[in-house]
Image 1 (cartoon, helix red, strand yellow):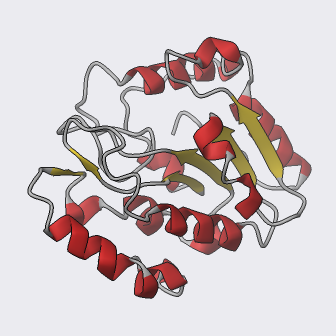
Image 2 (image 1 turned 120 degrees about the horizontal axis):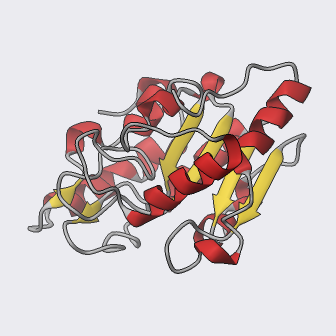
Length: 212
């Protein structure tokens, strides 16, 4: 179902019908389940967005993806390695540990956990990268950057969408991706969580409870 608060974006009338038709014709198992495909947008409407963390595509392992970038269902163990590295940096930065990989608590505080592709065939990472989902991410970035916002762009894929962020008094943090292949090239030690809270405090806004 189209998230009501975002339904005004042109993507939903222009692009989504074609994407849905392609998904209906795809005989493979598609992740995450259709009912949770837009969870990130459902949980964080435009006016609530304070931080955007941009991911690539959903986890291709059945039972992991549930509609939020980097997040997994609360019973998933062990954690995907990128998420494990995010948690290592969270501990290093703020000495916060979390009980599981479910990041819906962040979403409810205004952290939009958006993947640039919202579907993936099971076991085939990047398998839907050319369906056209990226247009939605582009429109979302343009929408939320109409006012000051913090953006975490981890890795080259996310950083390629920076031109969609309108000029403004934003905080934009660009580092290596937290994946095991690149985390030691600038993700570890970047302290994104405390930097965001310092920026929010300077604006008179409440901090994100990264443990919540």
